[in-house]
Image (cartoon, rainbow, N blue to C red):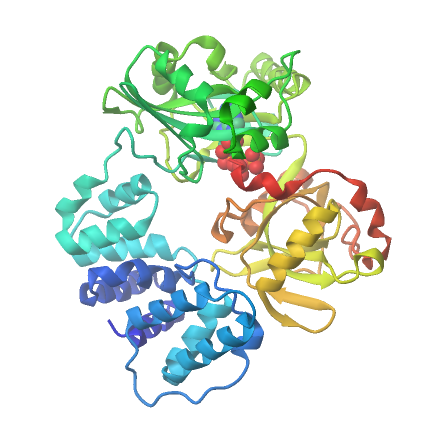
Length: 552
Ligand SMILES: Nc1ncnc2c1ncn2[C@@H]1O[C@H](COP(=O)(O)OP(=O)(O)OP(=O)(O)O)[C@@H](O)[C@H]1O
């Protein structure tokens, strides 16, 4: 397929507000596409590069190149060129990348150049493109849209489903069933400000401990046990305790969802960093396990004896879990059947307080009648933590002063908008260790799009977890609110920008805490963002965030 066609459809989809028109444009494109091109075409339309990072900064894009007169570039030519770009490394890499970019732009028409530059600079962003593309695929192939969505949920991503559907038609959807041995994307949670708010939103629910460890999905098929992370990496070999525990259980074909943590001698949870260090280490697993034994704790079951339990209400999945998993390995929970009842609300608050007192992170409230929404931030799981955090995208960073000279320090933080762009919510240089500063400087330089000597704008790719004390009204920031006392908790390399928190989430929290009247805080002060010459105090913080890629 010609790349020009993709550029044209991208423009058409962005230009219309009507969902049906967007879907129709995509369906038309899919009908004409070679199925082998689809794994590249869909990310391009969404504004993602299948190669992930290709290290092309603004410098490589800013020189004008004479466009080609007529379109000749095929999608696979562009893919090959970007793959070659991503592979450039070592001395002279910048110059070589520039040369390759110019070569590619020289083969593109003016329209194609615009699309390519938008793609490389991160400016092409089509919010919800994957959902639209799933509908477009249903339309193009005659498969029921609900079946396509379920297949995507089970495959964990759209592209394999798209390719199979276009190659073999609706029958191909049967390949994407929940299967022991094939990991699925885990269900995720939204946030609630308080337990009370969560109870009001969910109705009858379970209040469970929220454990700060590594998310694991455990598949057992007779003697074969596999353990996967939240990002579906296979970490079986590193977790002998988990495979041993799964082999002890009452069934021999099942899929469990849970968290691994480590407990100290007094039974209190050890830090996330220690757990991530243990799980991240491939060296001498037996010695590591003797030093820091891990405890799996399960909170859900997705399949038993080849029966798919995803659509069952949580209360039934919990009954199945209780039959399979012995009590010490099940998460502690309190069932709240009548959340309007005063005594029940007090009990839920007490459970939250007791969970924190035992050293855990918070609680997760889960609707008892809700199914398991794999790969979704389902509305029926709400986490409540005493420290409020948001996962935000780094939009830019400022060069530091004083002992941070030469380091990219003050981060500009953005929340996601529905259209795929970002609204800046504030800045922070707090909570950064020297290790983290060095790491972020290097990463952000790779993502740089422009540098005016003070502020470096970057491709919006890095997700960072930010703790904050509250939100205040602001006319300075585009969403109308700004973070108060924001500080970096850790980078979330396991998250993509499309997994970051949305402006709606942030505004909902603002409304929840302020009774909706937006009266908190004084206008103009966004916390702490004075020039960061005084920030040397931050560097005594010894938390090392570099091992957080396993955070699950
Ligand atoms: N009882 C529980 N039920 C569900 N998830 C739990 C539970 N205990 C701990 N967790 C962890 O909490 C996460 C749910 O929160 P969320 O979906 O927002 O992921 P997250 O962004 O990694 O959250 P956080 O950064 O707050 O841990 C799960 O991915 C899991 O790792």
